[in-house]
Image (cartoon, rainbow, N blue to C red; front, side, top):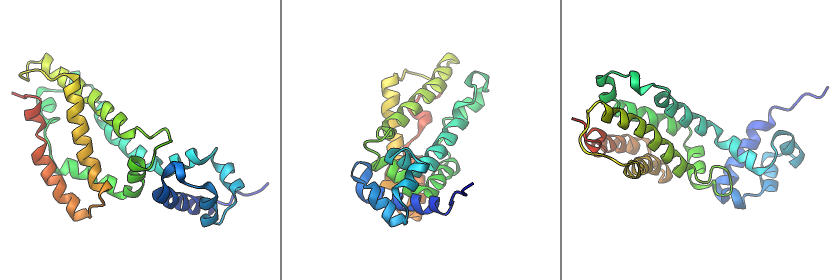
Length: 204
């Protein structure tokens, strides 16, 4: 029985990452990816159904990273949270946000591909879809605040979506603009001052 050459996988993914980075998904050439990786197109199709599945493999780590990050918040039953826990969930803590930026820094190349080069793939609307996911999550927390009489005023879902989209953009843009890590650390501090969620939702 033939033994699969596992040395091909990292070469292929590295080559694909560079081609997608230069050309974007739509213009990226599978033949070029193969030539630069020193593999045949047959070797690619043994591993992936086509170019889109290869792109998905390149960005999979960052997709998993974001899913795990958000999952920690969505898995919590807000109805079982104490008032203090619920109130604290809206606090912008620098160490908490820096943890997110640090996670994204480790996968920054794939993150930018996901944000900027994914047109033509299932991830082409990732930014918008993630903002919607954040909106749904935040509305669950916000409605619980309302039920307990802990907020004044009323934020509509449309308004929450605008806020979440703005917040998500502020997380993405430092990577798109290739900020150095020291710049991102400073950006994180500014972001935590600028986005005061407790005031935005009217916490009393």
